[in-house]
Length: 117
Image (cartoon, rainbow, N blue to C red; front, side, top):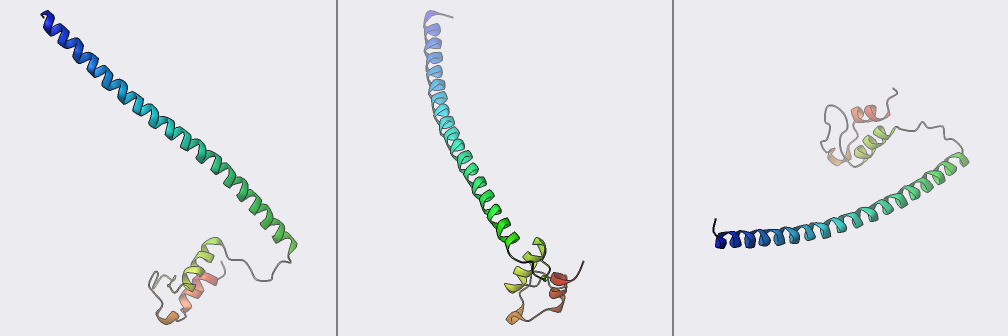
């Protein structure tokens, strides 16, 4: 290897190193942005958890202060089915997901929602 080739190799190595340093700098800036965003999200998440806990406490206080109704409460899944039914969709096995024309009642859907276990 002659001197010119050696010199050119060093120049190429220097150029590649500078490009790599520039890429590392960009990656470092991106990582800083991501870490800042992550910290913001963690703080927001903590505030939302605290707010949710406050709402649950208020709801528990309200539930304990009002008299118990005689009607049995629907489970979450049945309440969701009831909501779908009220929005005009069948929830029974025979017609599940299809629209109820003119919101006609469906005895099968009512059975699915309100039957005893």
